[in-house]
Image (cartoon, rainbow, N blue to C red):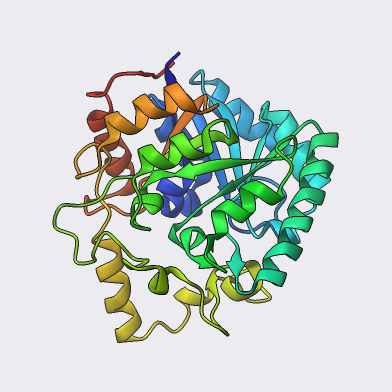
Length: 314
């Protein structure tokens, strides 16, 4: 069985903000057949985040023989899950992804996971399946155990699965192949980026020792809706950005490159996902590009990814 290659529309978010219909057309013309939408405005929009009716979005993708196979919904804790499900039913999609969360204490984590099980049941009743997408912080530890392990052990696999982001897994200091083997069939989708050889940031963001991995008292990691957005749904990080913050973003963004042109061992990841996971799709995510436009970035990522085996495009 080969992984089907998709694209998350976060990769072209700036284009989507300007003209979602024209951007969907450009994505279709590139040849991407499997699409993951990305709604970072779920407190105001139950759909794809850009005010596009489900019927119109489906019609646009139908024109190119493309289909929506997953949807990021953030902040999911503020979303109307039944309306989110209704929107995605029109698209023919059944995968709803919580793309981020904020973690602090053991008790807070356990409370969150209770919520995730509830949300998963609500979505299951609506014909959907909920997934959680990791960053590097899910591999920090609480009482010596990784947050991601708590997630797997304390959520019901009937309602909650994983969308494993291999880039952020690697940036937690772990081998994505070994993590795929560990979590196996709990993994329903794979996210794939690539790490730039000339990055200004180190690969490992979590540290080398158990003491560095362990969450400290009063520390919190990750992002939720309340910390990322203001009451109007605007990204706080983009408001009144200081020169220091702008430089931090420049250094952070230097770690991304077009997929298939960096240093990640992507073929090994594909082989492991095909053997050990339940993933049907590997979703390309081009966070940032140094090329003239995000469309140029996803075209080059397709070029790089087509060199690999164990995948299919349509």
